[in-house]
Image 1 (cartoon, one colour):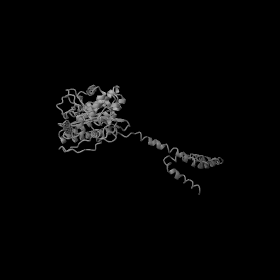
Image 2 (cartoon, rainbow, N blue to C red; image 1 turned 90 degrees about the vertical axis):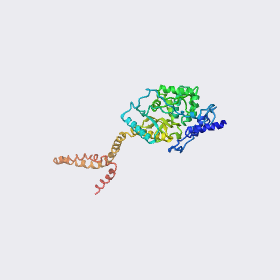
Image 3 (cartoon, rainbow, N blue to C red; image 1 turned 120 degrees about the vertical axis):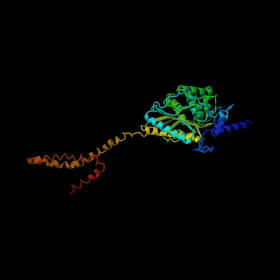
Length: 461
């Protein structure tokens, strides 16, 4: 009977989690295979889903599970697994953001940056008319200038596994303080964060903190210290600790990402470590923010998704870095939050589209600027230098032949006084160094060789 009960619960969880068997098993706390997925493209909305792309189920990181842990994923089966209805962030009731606590939107943005905001707002408005029910929020921060623009940036959204970004940040804080061993939870972090797999997130919180609940509480503390007042972290998805649910706003997520990138959270060493962990993402989970970006873009991000009673939740928050035209690294933070979408495809594909619009703006600003003037200056200098050495070689050969003749004519004139004045001008030809100007650098490259043979035949006759 127990097995039948578990099978029924797994089927229920499977339905709640949008058809993902691995996620359904995770909701029950049983042993699971290494996670990896591609979204279901149920465009028609009639419940028929088709794979959008191929799933790579093999994570690049495959160490031996930690001693004492059972199962291929290194997860300990729950003695009292949560009900299937508790999976994800739980079906959401009314959310009550703190009045007056929201951060100002678009306050420090330049007119040029506001043009990007207007373009995003226009896309969102048109898309909502096109697809019907969907709520979207997006925030973009230029990490060179600190400017932030957003559309619906203070609207509170369901989080999915994007909230586990803050579980990672709390854990890195412990590492930096010397209260945890990164190698002991390397596998858990790789699968929990890079594979977006909640059971492994719970595992690394339990190993690093006195308890799983203590880890979540520490993450919430840190969020408050960074100025995140509307966002809430009460549970790792699948593992409720009460009736409160997780919440996130796009503006506050970007606030945290900006602090991370600028080294305002951790030392340079641990900042680099954290960004590296957020870049080690399963290939099947790179379909929102990185989905339509070129290979020149590097994206450190945390995805989140699940199917709720009122529609699909598809989120992604991260930092995009690339090399600018000046050879320096450029970066921007972007958070995309969507909920109440009719299908999964409706939510995630639009996130990829907005991500590309933001990329194009930054690419034009930092990579397609006026071409540098330095490369054009060197060519002239380099071109004039080689001709100068060439003429000297040509000048000495003709000069000796022409010069001897005038000296013989010069001594004769002394006998006749009148003629000397006439002869005196002849020395002026001795400035026959005219050849020197003649072989000006320009003809030197090709004409010089052909010109040399011409004079030699003339004296022969």
